[in-house]
Amino acid sequence: MIWKRIQGLSYSSNLTALIIFLPPALLLFTMFVILPVGEASFYSFFNWNGYGSPQKWINLDNFVRVLSDPVFGHSLFNNLLVVLVSLCIQIPLALWMALLISDRARSSVIFRAIFFVPYILAEVVAGLIWRYMYDGDYGVVAVIYSWFGQQAPHVLARPGLATAALLVVVVWKYFGFHMALFIAGRQNVPSDVLESARIDGGSRWQITRHIVLPMMRPTIILSVFFSILGSLHLFDLVFVLTGGGPLNTSQSVVSYLYTFGIQRMRVGFGSAVGVILFIICVLVMVFYKRIFMRETEATSS
Image (tube, rainbow, N blue to C red; front, side, top):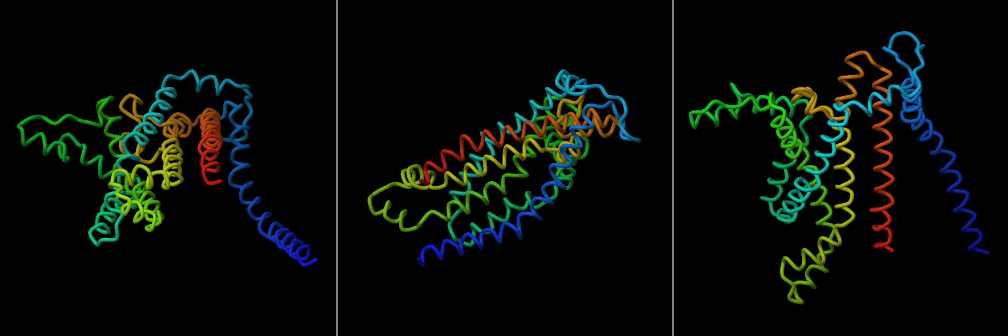
């Protein structure tokens, strides 16, 4: 009898919480997600410049133009390249550094602050700083080359070097964020477990490999998720640092949308790019949930 009353109270409290909190959340989600996506999907079927109401219905022509444009393909490749660099260079380095300075010493706090400062900077500020550093006439690159009596290359004016320079800035900018995540995950590892492993004769490498890293798996998966989604949304650094140039070789998908959709007053075309990017993000989320989240749930259970 008492258990039934408890179940009834639990059910009524859950129902009250749903009635109070669910409608505002659904309203915000509808206003800022469903309606913009639906509106962009509607505009993507028109040849529209953004003025007046769309009139010229062109079916799937915008999507065909986007998918057949080699610049869009290269922009998507650049996003995938950022993902690859983040997964293979940025995250491993951040994890290694987090394991080195995850203790509670005062010096580690200083190192954390130094590495986290770039993430605090706005993307526009970071892009302007590195744009000056890459300058072939007055920047840091020019000063270094002048020490050897050579003329510095204009890094951001060369197709291959511009993309590489952008990747360096991305790693530098978001390194501290991933390191902070890994430090938090490392500090959640129970100290008594580590002490037991040391008493049993485990070396530092063995403890890290067989105890620390497996227990940090959820944090690592979360960092990978942030890295992939952040790479797909990359815009500010590209726009400030290279503007998508030279010859559109450093465009990301979002900067491509802005350059060929917004700036050129092709709102229907830009809407098609946005819909494609939205579909890609949804597919990434589904893949992440089916692969990584399933493994995490199975491990926790």
